[in-house]
Amino acid sequence: MTERILVVGAALLDGGRLLAARRSAPPEAAGGWELPGGKVEPGEKPEAALVRELHEELGVDAETVDRIPGSWPLKPPYEMWVWTARLRPGSAAPRPLQDHDELRWLQPSDIWSVPWLPQDVPAVRAVLENTMSPTER
Image 1 (cartoon, rainbow, N blue to C red):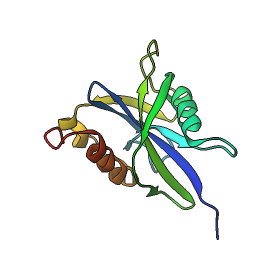
Image 2: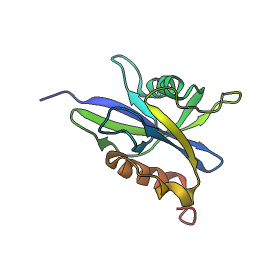
Image 3: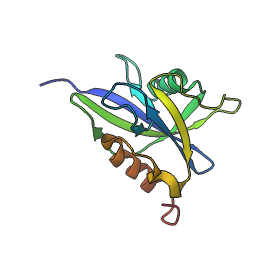
């Protein structure tokens, strides 16, 4: 049995908006939108990995808030966990530094205006269910 590798994703929220990131690599994912994040390194806590990944990928100083209940299988052996996160006061604005070529802040009514990567769709649905009122969804 292959040991699972944990991937962390961020539901980066600001004023009711969710940050979506468009992949530029690898080729099979390029053009698809995702929640930013990445792999947890050996010995690293998932929350610390998410803060590190957001700094590396987006150039921001962020903090995790709450874990979204659930986990989502990715290509084996990867499994994704998602946290809500927010920018710390004084953080730079997010910009696509690594693995992404565009970022968008999406209002609740615009969440489905981008082609999410199929593996992110259930996680995005869970984010909406756990962070927004029924009238915002």
